[in-house]
Image: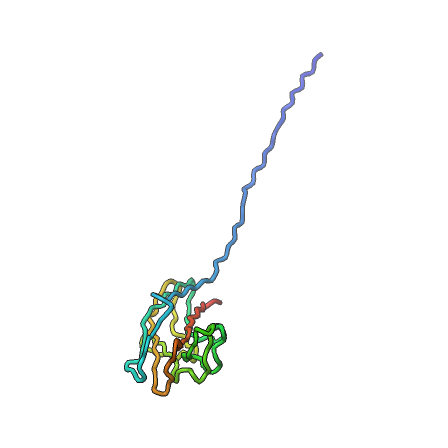
Amino acid sequence: MAILAACELVSIASAEDAAIEINGKISAVIEIDINPTPLWDFGYVDPGASPAPSRDDILTIKSNKAWTVTAKDILSSYTPVKPAGTQGKMVQYRPLTVGAWLTPTSALTDTVKIKNGGTTYDLASDPQIASGPKGESQAPITLSQQIRFTDDPTTSSNYYRIIVTFVGAQDII
């Protein structure tokens, strides 16, 4: 007698969805450019010149959040450090002696003025000169410097110098 046994192998397959979690963050970014050049030279200026020597330019701001731009004369960003008490003022600079500022008394009487639209700001107060929404914006600016008869003339290779720094900030909450 033969016994016949039938075996059936059953394979059960289980399928699940495969998932990958992807996370990311977007940095808050603001870029400020000034055109066409970051170096301006008023050249020789007579005291009392009217209008005061000035230069027009455009700030281009790209930001992915609402933004503000402040103009500053950051004394400590100079090497050597710009003399105390000269915030917002051009000071005589002697480049041939490894870059040396003359005394604070060699600063011009008036501060640099910045105009945006119909408003004029004083550089000594670190003014907020522009603001806008996210995206790309342009802010026309004019920098001017009044020269008085009480201001010292430059001698030799000296010149009056200031570095205006535009600082961008975003409305980040």
